[in-house]
Length: 252
Image: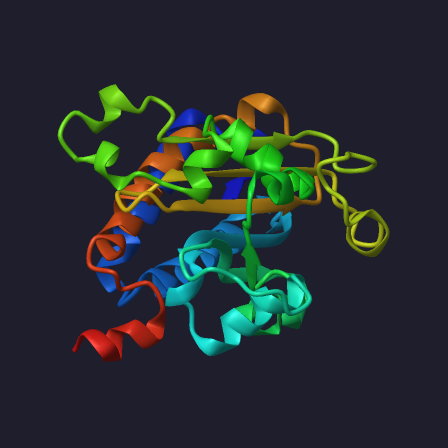
């Protein structure tokens, strides 16, 4: 376990290596994501107890490639309005937290699949918009990714912001964390930070942690390198299109 508020660079590297190797015992990106959020929730501590209230793993995914349940969830957000099959949806792959319902992605009420219709829509979702900007990515590149620029050869030289950190030091009253009355206040959320970046397919992954303790910026930024290692593990499944557990049976 790692005392989150006192995390060292060496410990962050140890954590990164452990997360990177989780793909060896995973069958899909969803399976990997579940192992990652569970590891982070249980291993990042405050006085021996979980330092996070909630840890979630999101990935952008084309609406037309989502199953019926997730497509329905996306349509509910838009109140039934039609969605183009290529529209990217910020899709919840895994979740771990203090409450039973926070440990099953299918029990999420409003975050299963968030359609990123256009720049205007994303700009009205403050946490998503800020997350994308802090990752060093352009909103257009999320909505209309160009996988060709992500070729493995020299990719790190061409895309310096391929992974980064999202950081909100004080969650209370922050305009980037809108769920104040029903989440931030009752569950004592102090800071929010996340890490992630762009996958070879052009889709983006993001792991977001809601903490019970204040997280200084130097601790949050240690996770930039954790993001790089997680990306390697996630790319294993991104390259073959094995995202959800159901995809395993379709590919066999």
